[in-house]
Image (cartoon, rainbow, N blue to C red; front, top):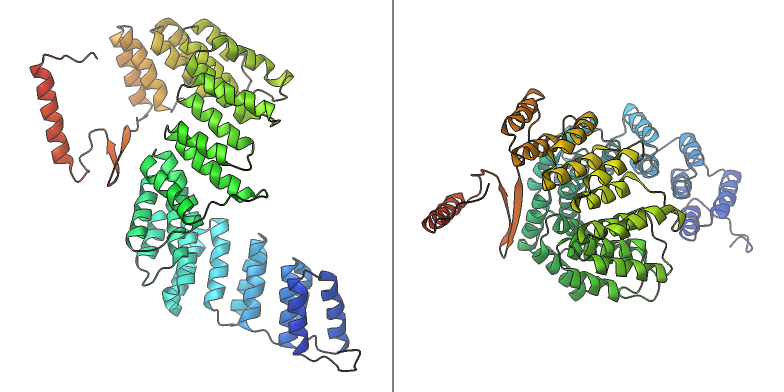
Length: 505
């Protein structure tokens, strides 16, 4: 075009700049900018917008802002581009500065402005200003916008305001897959795994097809609640819909997804299925091996866990800190005391891993389970200086298991010193005294617990049936079928009395 003597105009450059962005030619953008300036088109809105967007895409923020400031006319699209450009690279204060400047110049904000600013407040955890923007949304009538509602859900979720996120979701006239993914993610991140699964079932009932993001968000909740049936359904859905593909090249996302599925099976106790997933993985990482080792160790298959560790080393995967937590935990549960000691001695010299408090906790627990209370106590004393109460609590549990109330008193001093507000410390020590027949001392511990205003959280159990997950809390009457449940319990208790069964407390 230039060779033929045809001069580019203001319509030429925006297309040319977009092409440079698509092929990532940042040097050419600077050359074009020079030509634009030479031709006197640098103050044109369309050409200037193209330059600003290019510089933002290449993260040349100072150049973008310089071009932006020089423009005499700026539309709302350009303002939005600047706000979102700073937000996407984590420069939140600059993004808010642009937004404030936009408001001071009386530029009418659009729904894209709102979503950009909400993303900033979401990342900053600023729910106060987020609520203020929500009020602006309602006032300007943007509440019906799916994109704005999704941004509000995300903002409230990242600020841990689950109720407000759910309220925003429920009043939406129309929802898309992003709306469902956002609200499900909010519940999962806040640890409401039961709520996550409820929303997922509701999503399926309403005929919304989950995508890979939905499934990978719900899967950890299945893992945490040991909801094997739901986990299997998700795995099956992934296979049937081609969401799990065996590619010839390494894909990090595929490895992470397969690791998540394997972790779900392992924590639900289905080690056979976990191992099948592992065997079918074309690419594995250290986490893949760790999941199997931890799974086998957790469920008492010590020999299988150690066999996987040997195969891992043979496959030239370097074990890390998590690997040895799994190995030592396996030794603890399987009673391989000597082998566990050997691993602790060699963990740094042979494998190059510096032992942490978690490793010492595993070995203390292993010795305690084996009845070697004194050795466990001495090891706890020599553990790293940052020793936390978990080590001493594990030893206190061992004292309870073996009825060693004398040693428990020494251990309790360390426990209460490190974590005086943990209810488990008091319950364990009280149980130690009761098991030893020292009822008055046990009562003293309970009174001390009251004086310190320490409360024990009620125990909660989840039971998975064909129609979903049911949660039960000790003494709970909130379950919709609690009358039937208690009636059945009373009938079982009556039957036990008829057979002269006396429970051993």
